[in-house]
Amino acid sequence: MLTRRQFLKIGAQFSAVAGAALIVPQISLAERIGGGRPEHSLMNRPFIAPLPVPRVLEPVGQDATTDYYEMTMRAARKAIVAGTQTPIWGFEGEFPGPTIVARSGRQVVVRQTNALDVPVTVHLHGGVVPTESDGMPTDQILPGMTREYVYPNQQPASTLWYHDHAMDETGLHCYMGLCGFYLIQDDVEDALPLPKGAYDIPLAITDRTFYADGSFDYPAIDGDTLLYGAMGDTILVNGARQPRLAVANRKYRFRLLNASNARPYELALSTGTPMTQIGSDGGLLPAPVERDTIRIDAAERVEVVIDFSAYAVGTRVVLNNLLGVGGLSQIMCFDVVREEADDSSVPSQLRTIERLDPASAVQERNFEFGFDGANGLWTINGMAYDHHRIDATPLHGTTEIWRISNGAPHHPGSNTGLFDPGKDHSHPFHLHGVFFQVLDRNGEPPPAWEQGWKDTVSVGSQEAVRILVRFDGYAGTYMFHCHKLEHEDRGMMGHFQVVTDEGDHEPHH
Ligand code: C2O
Ligand code: CU
Ligand code: CU
Image (cartoon, rainbow, N blue to C red; front, side):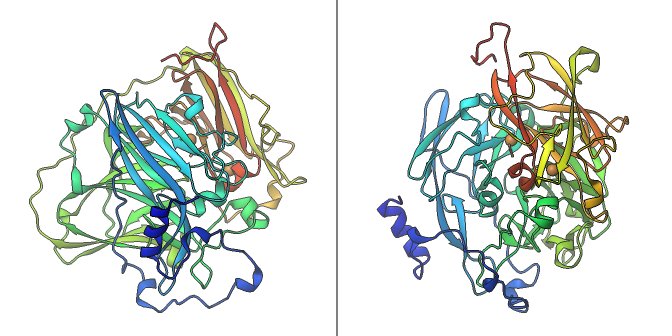
């Protein structure tokens, strides 16, 4: 399915490798070689690999309204662990895939070709898009086929990402590398004096486990992996192991994405100084928020400005993970290597955000996230995913309150005795096709940094989070699910259908 040109390109990069023949690594116990990882080689020490920044994809065409892109999902190899080449699946053979930079109000069309040997779908996470372009798990691109996705970008500047969403296999496919950034820019943000260009860097944090031969060790979804999701033992940022970024002593904007299958992180700087959060899933916050530590659950985005002018040249600033031990406790480092003038700043007001009014809500719905121990399935209101079932039918243009609860003691199906209290039990709850605002968590109003537009919200153990959703995107059927991908792949997913008075499925925008 690879074109001859692509084949030759892979062949040139990885001459020892038959590019077209790469498949997912076979996972057998015999291949698990304990202690076989070359821990002492240079490359496997933290802060050796330079931080890669995914390249920006060039459009293949443009007209008055639209930028056209083409991508091919294919197998490739990537040097991640010393002395090995890791088989990956990547958009354009890259992990993370190339970044699409879109303009708010200007349409993007992406032609995606599947040169892998498994069916895939492509979902734009955070995209307000017609349902045909949402990459629903059942809307597959079969091997060798191409599909066109239309993204209207009628939404403000924000850090989105695209990833595979194949039925029951999203966890494996994302682990193999099928994800990338999709940034939307707009005039409001451009007018602000925030760090720009080379000082505006996306950071996709993932965790992976490797076999001794360098291939990814994606676990079977049972035991702890079923309960807590796939947990890797090695941190990668933009596909490189605990990388190092050489910085000037000035401000940088970092677009943090937790692209891990399941692992949450709590980020803090080794210097003890705060980071300035300026944005969340749906773009800029109303005002910056100083944060000493930042918890980021799977699929969430947090945008921060870090000011390195506080440090002398020669200082190393480590981005730590307070939820991790050993190698999982350090994400990456910033080495302050030079002085540089800085004309950027973080204004005290970033943009205005309309606060949705709970009094305007026409419905309140309850979603209890639970576990069906008997069947090994994750459930919402006691039910595992069924692609024929619609769980909610909100009316287009109206606002609803959705209450998502995690492990409510009265839930008959919940079997909390199964769970290790020392582990993370959050469910990062995600809605497609719309943004929402957090109304309260266990009755308390959200902190300032959670008052922007969100598409994913972390619902911790014994928590109930109420969100306000205005269904003002498109009519049609969309998904909602837990973004711990192994929970999603094992049932924790549902549909809502945005309906109109006329009962049609036309886009109303
Ligand atoms: Cu990242 Cu269904 O989404
Ligand atoms: Cu999504
Ligand atoms: Cu979950």
